[in-house]
Image (cartoon, rainbow, N blue to C red):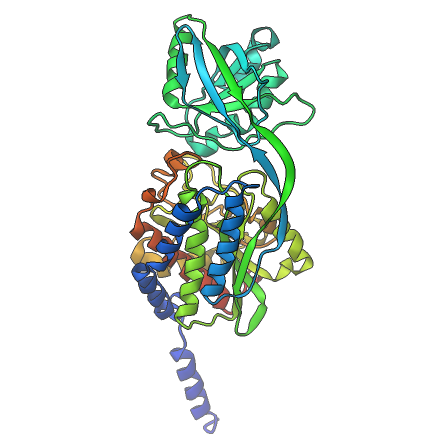
Length: 476
């Protein structure tokens, strides 16, 4: 027993010398990553190039394909390995010329943008009286007799993007079901300087497809006032929008190879496509450039995580999510080797932290009082959640490490459905909904310091998830 005492003392000393928590173990690399991110200018320069030299990037456009080739070249320049651009078939929706005009009781051009994936009008346009609905229930109560042959204007109360966007995505089919000839919707924002917002709609099968557009809050309010006064309103809508045959595009992928478990992967990214207006700066140029720069800094600092970290620029998020589905299909059975997926698709305003768990909730801050989504199956354990909370503490110095239930995003939703734990960046979201899907989504809206804070948060979270001994899905 006396002979084993020195060994016992030595063992105790070794245990005591080991970091007692993730926060302690990764404090030094986290601080290095944060300092590097806050001093970095390269990520901003890349984002500026994307915005000013390539511009908006709707699927089917030459500018999107230029962005894809440029993105792959930038990954190679940053020293990423296994850079590739696997093909993805994507929609080829073409806006064409469009306008809307109030023709009665006065003549006045309306601020409008056709909704993505909308059909067009006949060449002569559609001239019809407008009926207004504040909800789907109100529209249904009107009945076919009051709706058929009319243009329906949806003017719901703004309840945040998540609580209101259903009128944009589903309004056209709801109106068509009652015989409407076109649909208009108030833009999906709470603030407007006569700025119309586009965004995708989804037609229901077995219902007529009618043209649909968003109009500004100011024009919506004017039409509402006229209707409230009992004044009939007539609008002329002309849209050349049409759907071409699907075309080939590409995801963009690049890795930094893991030092011990290279087959296990932490993937992070955003979507490279945008709508055909503005520059796609916040939605989602900032997401793809911030995730790429976060991983570039890990490499630049000589940090070598156990697992592979992969950056993906997914394509076609705005109009159907083909890139995210293609990535999941490409993985097949190897999806089980993905230990975490992180998406940034809520703009580059000051980060608050991450949502962790299920898809669709992590893009931006939830409206006050909204119910968080339940965590995904792979991320339900309290031990996994607590581990992510502990990693978040490494970001306390920049106030970017708050962890809340419900994370992910559109592009990584197929991964989460396959059991991969998902995280979505959450920001203050003070202005994102004022800019995205508009001509105003331009590089000047990017605040350099806030972009750098996002880079810092992504770098720390992805590095620790890739390097820590356990996988989140193994924690019980």
